[in-house]
Image 1 (cartoon, rainbow, N blue to C red):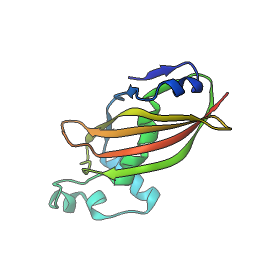
Image 2: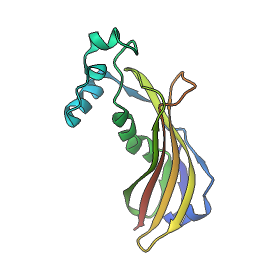
Image 3: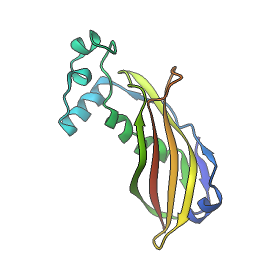
Length: 152
């Protein structure tokens, strides 16, 4: 469920607004293996299905950085801001991995617009985001993400 804003400037008055949740997103073994190939991280808990199934999590798990990287897709579905030429990833103030995401789990994002400030280039937006795992009370991760929205 996306929150709609008429312009990047409108975010200045939206601090404290809850956004989301996004739609559920499935993380299957093919995605985990593609991420392993892209990052050259082939640790057995991710890609060796037989060994991982006998291991501590009972199945392969997604890389923490895979789950974090999905914020690009998940968070883009939380906000609809008109009049944006581009959004630029400014970085993270905080990231914590709280629970592994087991293969074939579904995740989604929820968040709060925690800060917005005008810069010489646009609006710097801070979102406190949580990636939830379907059926779990404990989230996969929490992150404080900073982006720059440049007006059109």
